[in-house]
Amino acid sequence: MRPTLHTPHILSTLRDAAALFALCAAVTSTAQAMTIREMRALEKTEKLGSTYTDYYLVGVMEGAVEAHNQAVRQGASPSICLNGRKLEPHMAKGLYTTELKRNADVYEADFPVQLVLTNALTTVYAC
Image (tube, rainbow, N blue to C red; front, top):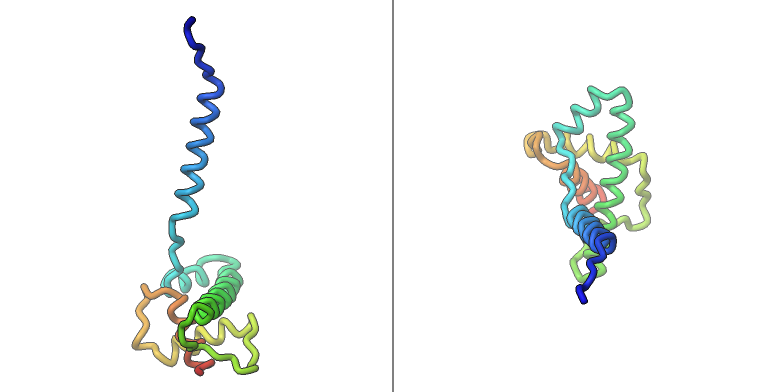
């Protein structure tokens, strides 16, 4: 007796394996951070560019604070200390622009926005 091949089952299994591989590849790939140059271009070229960059800065700020808090929980020494001071979403743009002006000769256009904002938080909310 000859074994029968279940083609629909094999195709389904291959399709599932391909989908799983694609999902794993998407999850493990790293996202590129926006550079200072890209952010300036977005502000100038898009109709809502300024709004987009404001939201991006808020996300970067919140992400930087959360990454810092996670590192502190794992034993790193703190470098950002709020000490009861406010850190609100509307402050992200001001922190970013002030840091760029304060250290204009340090930051190149290809540096990530996250670096600027993290340095701003470390300076303003020093421990």
